[in-house]
Structures are given as structure tokens and as C-alpha cells.
Image (cartoon, rainbow, N blue to C red; front, side):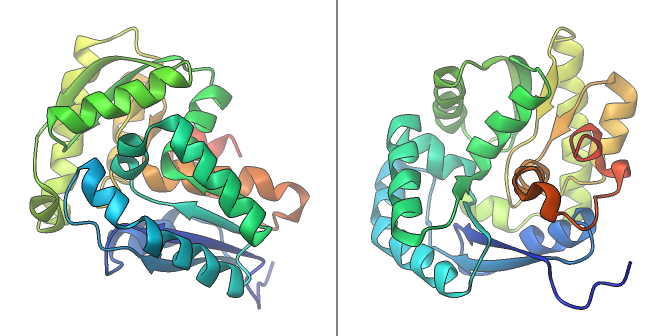
Length: 248
């Protein structure tokens, strides 16, 4: 099938002033004809105060992506949603949908929807965040009925996570993923969150080793968009990018 014009436009609000790994990984896992439209915030650290400073800009970004005729708008940044808490995050998404007339989502809500789709209520996590961020994430997931039974982390600041090399990120995803899955063999899925984390090639490797779904921000958000597209979906993603993408 020849795709001349994009058949789906996913609007993506990332927490940073630049786009790199988000788009790089998206265009490897998304099927042909699916386009990413990115705009950004300027999150400076993993804290509620830093997130709240960006909320006025967030509304501007929703409006911008609506003008660009995005089919769906998603807020990237699991720490952003985790800091706000699920009740407030869902309220923001509801208001954004009323304001734009476009379905609105977050990476974290996409993770939750994907985990429920896969029947996973007890999960393991591998992160690059401090314990405080991991605990906020666990509470958010618990509010959705998902229990993180084990977590392995290499704590870094936001600035440090921006400076890592793709090859190092890949090896770290394998290292932490293997550690936590060996510690928690009853986990029904592995969550490897973080938009700045280059880990798409770790997904098939870890799934082959442990026979459990492995979810990244970009896979869950892309899956959620494709799932919502339904009969509009002209092409499906390659199943080599993991059990979640193969389930579309």
C-alpha cells in the first residue's frame, strides 16, 4: 500500500524544549502514514512545583496541536502525570478534550490502558528516576488498580537523563530489566518508562528472555492511538517491536 498523505496525526506534548528520542523511536515503531507532531514544555526538574509552573504553557500547547488538526493529543512525561496525581491529571485531560474537541491522553494513562488490555495488574518497573518519583508513579498506578511489586532504578536528575548516550541507555534497560524480572518472576509485565530513554531494542530482547510484555512510553502511547483509530488504521505496526504492538 502506498501512503501519500499521513492518515493519522498524533500530537505529542513533550516536557522539554527539543525533540530527539521521542521522534526517533516513534518513527521506528509506528506504521507508515502515521505522523508525530511535537511541541514542548520546559520542565526543569522532577517535582510538583516544576510541573505546576508549566501548566499555563500546557494549555497553550493543547490549543496549538488542535490548530494543527491532530487526531489525538498526548502529554508525554510520566513524572509530570505522577506528580499531579491521577485525579488532577484526568481532570486536566477532560478539560482539554472539552476545549479542543480532540481525544487527549498521557503516556501514563496509555500505560494503564495497555496493561489492562494485556491483563497485567501486577508489574515490575525499571526506571532512571529518584525514589520520590518512583513512589509517585506507584501511587498513580495503584489508583488505577495496578500494583508495582518490584522496582529497580538508576536514579538520575532530569539534566543527567538528557545527557546519556543511546548505547548506554540500551544496556541500562537490559541490566535493570533483567534484575527486576529475576527478582519478581510473578510480574505480569515490565514497565520501562521515560521518554528520554532509548530502549526500543531492549524490548524484544527482554520479552524473548522472560516471556512478559515490556512497555515503553512510546509503545504504549502509539498503541493507544492505533487502538483508538480503529477502522481508520491503514497499516499495522511491525510485531517485532513487542507483544503490545503485536496486539494492535
